[in-house]
Structure formats: C-alpha cells, structure tokens
Image: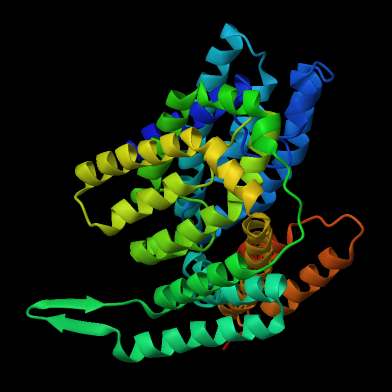
Length: 440
C-alpha cells in the first residue's frame, strides 16, 4: 500500500507542477515553455510538443530499464507528469484533473510493474534472473567515468592520471579496506571509494583548468524568472521529500547505476553515484531554469541522493521513510533558495559549467557500452535456456548496428540491450512452448 500511495503522490505532484507552468522534467522541453509563456504558442501545441519529446523516452527507455532492473526509473513518473499536466488547461479545473490523472498514472505504474514481474515469473522460462544481468557491468565499470570526463576536458594525459588513481584506489581498498575496531568491522567498498577518488581528482583538474568561456550574467538578466520559481518553494519541497522517501525505500531510482546498487543493499555507493550524477546535471537544469523560469520537479536530483544517504543509515522502515522525506524536502528547498547563487557560481567559473556537460557525456557513453555488453551476456543466458545461447548476443549486435546506422533510430542506444533481452525472453518462451528448443 505504501508504494501505491507514494507513486500516486509523485504522479500527482509532477502533473500539478507541469500544469501550473512551474516545472517540467524533460530538459529539452523546458525551453519550449518560453514560447508558451510569451503567448507565441497555444496550450494544444504545448501539449503536443510535450507528448512528442517524452513518449519515446517513457516507452523505449524508462519502462524497459525499469522492467530489467526491477526498480522504477524516475522518468516513468515525471515525463508522463509533463504530458498529463500540459494536456489540461492551466486553470482550476485543469489543476484538479491533472492531479487526479497524475495520481492514477502513479498507481498504474506500480500495478504494471508488479503484474509484469508476476507474469514473467509464471512463464515456462522465467528469464527475470537473467534479465537482471543487463545492469551487471554498469555497476562495475561506472567507477571509471571521472577518467573519461578529465580526458574530455583536460586531455588524455590527465585522463590517464585520473584512471591510474581510480584503479590504484580500487586495488588498495580491495586489499586493505577492512578495519576491525573491537567487535565492530568496517568494510569499505572498493568500487565506491575508487569512484570517490576519481571524482575528487576530476574536480581538482576542473578547477585548475583554464577556459575561455565567457561569463553570461544569467542571474542578472533573468532575475524575475528566479523569483518566479522561488515563489513555489513549498510545492518543490513536497516533491523533493516524496522522491527522497521513494528512493530510500528502494522504490524509485534516477538511473540504471544507483538503482541496481540500491537493490543490492549498497546504499552508500548508490548515494555517492546519485550525488555525482546530481552534480553533473546542475549546469543543465539550473541554466534552463534561470532562462525559462521553469524548474525541474526533481531539481538536480540532490533530494534523491539525500534519500539514499538516509537509507544507508539503516533506520527502521517508518522512521527511515519519514527522515528521508524531511531531509529530501530540506534539500530541495535549498536547491530552490540557492538557485540564483548557484547560477552565479556557474557564471563566474565557466570550467565548472563545462564540467557538467562532460560528466553527462561520459556517463551516457559508459552506460551505453556497459548496457550493450550486459545485453550480450544476459541475452546469451536467456537463449541458453532453450539451447540457443549464441543467438542472444548475435541478435543484440544486429539490432544495435542497424539501429545505429538508421537515419531515424528506433531505440535509444541505452535501451538496445534491455529491449532485446526482454524480447528474447518472450521468444524463448514461445520456443519452449512449441517444443523447438535444442537439447543440451
């Protein structure tokens, strides 16, 4: 019941924020609001644009990866919240309808996820255990992303230095990372500490990096937009608290990295991943918010990271959920309050503004490759259930290559591995039912 309530509230809040023209989740959709708010676009055109830019991400990325990992990705709620909120008029009636439909969508997502997992479990070939392997390499390879970021921003030499520090930290922690103090044992996570060391190195190089990027003075030019966002701080605090609460209960994730870690109970490492991801999205989210006057319902994800940090404290379920809500609300409140301050820092230090772009690019490339490799191994394991293991990775490679070379790719690169693995799971069951499997 708790999951249904939280999902309904998240769905309702995201739809309300979009309906009142306060916040939308899709970064590419946010600038479009300027046309609507200035009267150059009507509500129907705004709604149609919202649907066009978000529906593919919901189906091709959010749902497929949520099914593969067994935990709902935040896009599933918030992107649909954009669509629902904009499809109703921005008046009192539209506000009520947005809240109701948004809540129903949240409940529908939870129902679908539980039903689809139960359905797959009842099939002759239950491929859910193998499907979970899609994210295996994401967890193990993501720690090296700071080296790629430094390589982009500062050159290959400094990228290699960052890589050496990352790998060296992993080896040291793996060998000497267990400490015994009386009856208390402290075991440090090698991958998490390696990523932390790489992230610190990345920030040091970024601060020292000289850049010719010009200061833009956004906070002065668009001060009225900042004030408009701050007026709705209560709504943002509620949404941030809900997202943090959901993350702390392992019910929601922002990405395909922290999600599997949380599912494994590695909340500290998941929180660190979410924190770094949040830092990477600060320039994009804050810049578009300042320019358009429309923020993100999730801010820059710091509230989700806060929820995972609370989960790492190991509090009991009622107290943990309540604490996460309070901390998430406070963090989101600070994000809104400090919007102008952070925008000023990004303007004053262009290298930090560029760092966010490099972080997002590096994350996307590593995720694409890791999910592709995970798709190979998972698809092999699934098809091996009917004696056709090699058919799995062959199919993944064919789909990836054709999708990559298509003039209009059907799938996001990140979704190829999970989508093909799910499709092959269904095909494996058809083969089993028809008795066409190959004997071992």
